[in-house]
Image 1 (cartoon, rainbow, N blue to C red):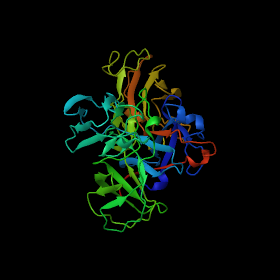
Image 2: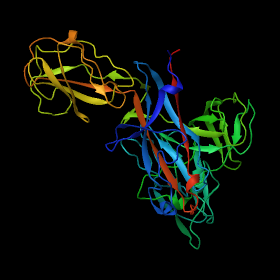
Image 3: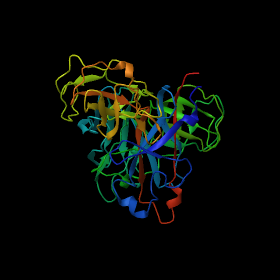
Image 4: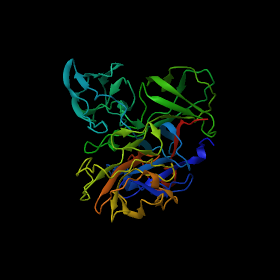
Length: 435
């Protein structure tokens, strides 16, 4: 039976960041974040973050291919933004520079070696200066003329005619916010669009400059040229499509796509950039499928050292050469060691889970995942050789049919008491299945 949407689940993260057995149920208040309060708008973390796992929970080893996530609905509160941080999709760090009045003025942002997320870097500029932004993405340049202070952060759009400086000053700290790899943000349409349209009018990004902080990563709630985006009907989950965003027209608040839309959308349609989730830090999930990632190998001695193989003396004779069957709703991402107590009996130890079961080589063995009552894996009796001694250990690694994104919530100083129930957002996951 082919995988369906009913087989896909969201789960919270455990304290160590791994997937817990606590599901995130749709439509339930505070199922991921607590209510915001006005004090959250003065916190650089802006209301917190939460790791969110998506899992393909089938009782078989079935593939959910090329998963991606995005934002299904945005908070009603205009002072709140929720975005997703997923996988790094860039092959190389970009080079971003500022040219101030014709002279090179430094790098716009630094990059984190693991996620290459951006950090804001201020540049002091006088009123009337011409600021040009140059990117090695090679797709565009942005040119600004510094104007008076307006209170908004115009660099959230790309490009813009002017950049503000603080009032009563001839110089200010200008922050240019650049394209972020691996982030999903969303806007909504301000009018209906018919099938065949190649552009849509949308709401502007809502966070203000003062909600940002030089001491924390800069997660920008906006869309950029060359993002892949999902266009979604505001109330009908079955009506949606993806397009490449080829231009952002700030003067008219318009997004332009690479090809005509297939569906008609009313005002309030949600346009979200999309991200690939991660199965482990730095590794994008190209598929959700339970897998044995390493060939089992035997150590003659093992001092509970989880270093990569060999991390001990390999046994020349005692081996496990059988298959290790998995099912999506039982397997987890874990390093395993089967440590022999005598010539036939072993205990199962997980790097994260600790000791979970005791088995033997004389019978098929399937230690149960208590969260799903399905086996973590199965060791077949036919796969064991002879020659096992006390202290021998079989090492291998499995990956579960799951991956994660980080959900990030930010609040601007506009947040006031009584707004707590308008900070809700919804997320979606999509991908490819057989059948």
